[in-house]
Image (tube, rainbow, N blue to C red):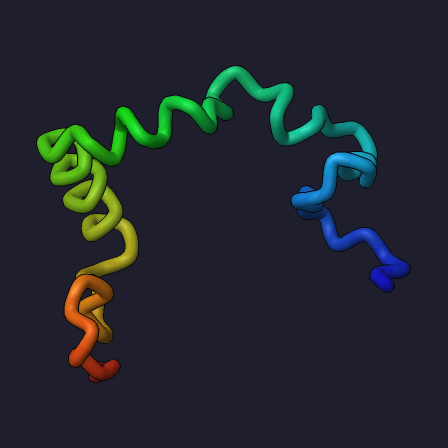
Length: 73
């Protein structure tokens, strides 16, 4: 059991959000049904990947779409 708040949101709906914050599903940008639409938009995914690469660099590791792939750095 978690006894101390760590400033993050719980995945459980019965757990209150961090003090002074809205619930995770109360944010306007939280749109679970829209995830499928976003994931099916290849151009939007490419733009998102490019933006993330600018901030954190290229992704390294196993190819999640290849069941025979193993992690490498």
